[in-house]
Length: 95
Image (cartoon, rainbow, N blue to C red; front, side, top):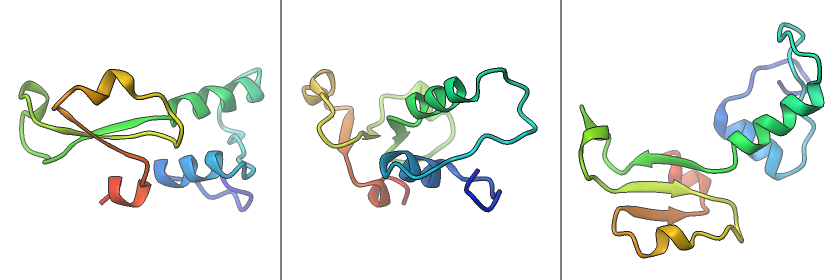
């Protein structure tokens, strides 16, 4: 959540983490260690992947995927693959 108590979408949450903006954990989440939960969320918002063209049954095809990674992220395992388009531009990724 942001400082107004609004729930953030994935794009907004990733932006907040990247820019070291304060993010809050909802009081409705029953966890003991909220700082651990925030670190867990940072890890899960680090890298995103989506199909280049969204269509039915895309997970069972060899279609290209767009991979959103942070700047300076080591993407060696994706460079030689023809299945991935790598971007650091979140606006391009979320189109």
